[in-house]
Length: 261
Length: 376
Image (tube, rainbow over all chains, first blue to last red; front, side, top):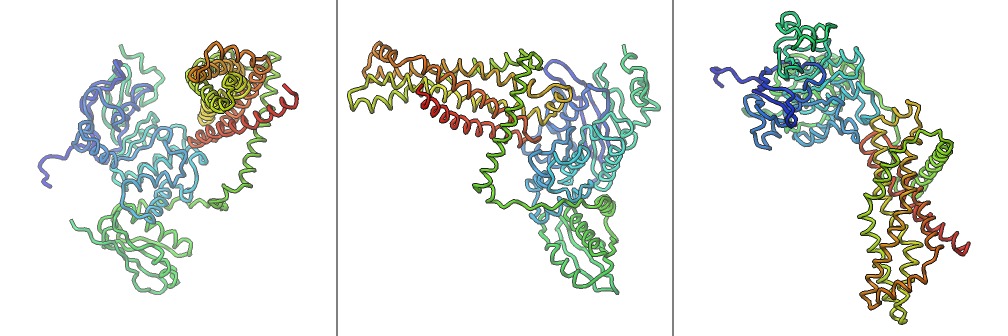
């Protein structure tokens, strides 16, 4: 490999416009997520954070623009290529997304069986290891309905990291968790990110989480319907030219929406 | 880049401690030997300290981590101290995270033998369980009905209307099809036999009595059990998984009054009407076949009229009321008592249909015996 041109960013969002029918959710989104970033997508309720995540996951086709992974367009790739790209992602959904009819072990075994060449005995050991990573060692035979909400989130994380993904996506990871569980989950995300070297993309509006773990972020505004800030959240809090962003990040009482024309 | 096979060597003891040297690429597809072999070797050495050396490691992935975790856990159970040395970056941190929380000891349960679920005893116990649940449920429904009669129940008229519409007009097409065909089948079967005695004309009696007393109401009930009973179970089961039934209960509303009564009353109102409709279409279907066998329509009608009596119609209607209650109880009970997973909702729908069919056949037989006794 020659080092002449810098490698493309891990995820590039280019001129992305998201719309449901004729109603535009967000337009002209342009940002990069670099390799090893913990990247936060933030914004008020209903601004399209989760929709942006669904676009990045390829669940919704953009009405305009493109998303590139390591320089390769996702939406112009063939179906088999998209499948190959998706195998390098790990995703946890807002409500966990665990298969309720399967035990935790079966949930984690599924992607390993489908996409790897590990032997059965190896898979059993790997499942035990993944559960141990999220602090759920010994819970193999439990069903998602038999464990608490916080444990379900961690189990979902164990399934997301089953294939040692390059990119981890989280939709509201700490929604519905108490502050301590939420902090432990944040720490877990950072530890796993550091040791696996993955890129992490998180949708959240939990300020403590944002400042604790984010290295980079984008702020989606629901009035102008586009991104109005991009950068490290701590910098944005102190130096953003946009009052809305500073208010969001300092949790100001002045309603963020009233400042805008 | 060629990959070197994953391997480990257990070095000789230094006093009571030993070093496990790892080498090669520990990645998927290598199929290295199991931990069991290493475990026996470790056990034979009576160690107090195990250190794992990763200086010769190549590439690695989760399979290495799973191996290290097993080494760690084994050392832990044998009261050995465990350490890792010269590991590539990231491994020690991952191991620290993985071993931070003590493993959960699952309560040991006897796993049921595979065949036992087919044993007659278990089947009987299941059926008994269903029956008991149904009885308790029927009791609650009766109490709710009493409150409804007193005007104190939280049952909404708008729900009742919706369910009437879903159960009635929306079912016309399938009821029409099945009852015309059943009428034709009855007529065909009867005509072939009666022809041997030159008594084809009595096909009309056979179809009228058969449809009114038995087939019209039974076919309607079977269709409704599959169509509406299963739908009730799936709706209520999904509400159970989404905690909607909890929400209703904590609002101080009885789920029986709010969810079950409108569904059940809708079926009770709709079933007799559908039965009358099915009876009519079945008799018409029988007439078509009779026409094909050389019986003029007017003959068929006149002969049919002699068989027609109020008691036959009444028997069918009484059965339809009983069946409506049974289908609603089977469907709603399965839904309300459903578990909270997607599989449980499917199970509830299956339960609803199976129990409804069993109830229908048993009730039909029972009612027939009673009417026989009463000479109706």
